[in-house]
Image (cartoon, rainbow, N blue to C red; front, side, top):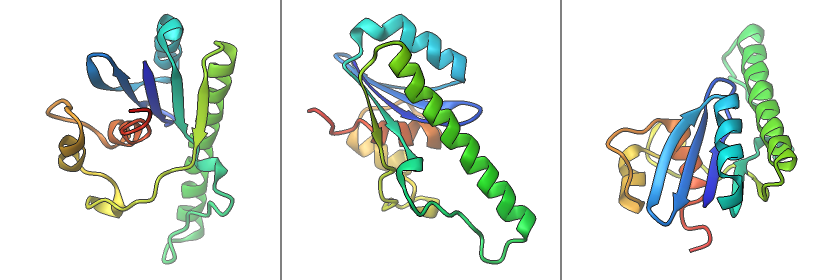
Length: 145
């Protein structure tokens, strides 16, 4: 089983690739812990999107107020800490993992994100997905084929 995770404070995107294909989920922190604990013997690798690896990770709206930019920084920091805790979770459970820099935003959806249709052309997925699930899938699509 290969797992990709897009960390988020409320619910992280989780993509799973196994012998049956791909499945996509959004899980709270403790739902993710339960999932990894339950399947840890079957997990070959967890790939975690690690935006904190980008040295110049400065997210700012040029026209935004100081309060808007402070909120952006706060949200980014919270997501980074969630990701770091997921790394710690994998270490605690002795699950192999990789911290992966976010991929370049080269897709057609808003802000260069991948759309449902673009991902559906690459892999078989449910009829509806959210951005966190799609970003998690990108962590594992084409990896280790």
